[in-house]
Image (cartoon, rainbow, N blue to C red):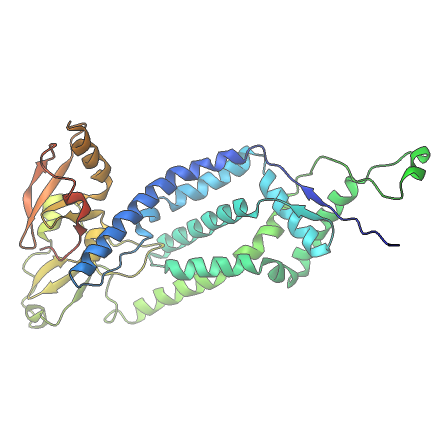
Length: 364
């Protein structure tokens, strides 16, 4: 062998990465809500009804908070992880030394920011933006971020300049008396400089696809304005059985018994949520749909009890401990009607069997 090839890579360690454990708090709640959703889907399937609720409803209320937490974590670690991202991005573009880091950390942070911005856009335009489209566009931008960055010379130039500056600052000066011992150069540890311009340049390719979401939301908004008869509102739709409405005799009651009993008006959610109907009108009577009930934070336990999803863990603890740890109220359901009187939950009010039979249905 006459030629030896030596290679290595830089290893970057983030001592403040543990701050991202805050996401476990949100993930625990999300996993619990997904389990509830799967039970509801399964029970409806057993009744020969195919219903799939919006999995993003459980996290849509916390999107902005998650985005703020990501920025707060970055500030706490003095933007170390995003600086590493910028360094890795520039080194890849310039084909410099390879940098090893856990890219999954920034993947999660950028996804949280992307979905948070989507939620803000939907709230500003009072429009619903499809979660599947949002995640697809984010993954597309993240997967091809290096290719997208190469399309813009200014982004590429800033990133390469930052990576090259860091690379040169790591080259150590070897004394003359030691140069003869080894033909290899010496690249050592060195402080990593903070460069806001390089950070923005490295992050921006991931958000280039957000332009498509903006166009999508604006077009939807314009379409609903231009054709209000075809998309009147998110709150309701009229079925074929709505003869009273078609004859102009009006609606018997503007509120459902579900709304009057729980005091929870069917919300027209906007932001990062799928399209759904809050209610339907059948012969002039307003009924809350399965989507409207679930998206308002309620499920029906064993076909008898209307329970808030936020109270499910409390109900479970009351049953397991045999003690009323806090005041929790449920509503009795009978013949698609909700009792107008709330019932205080005691250890013997519901059973564990009831909590394994969640479903949703039309409620008057």
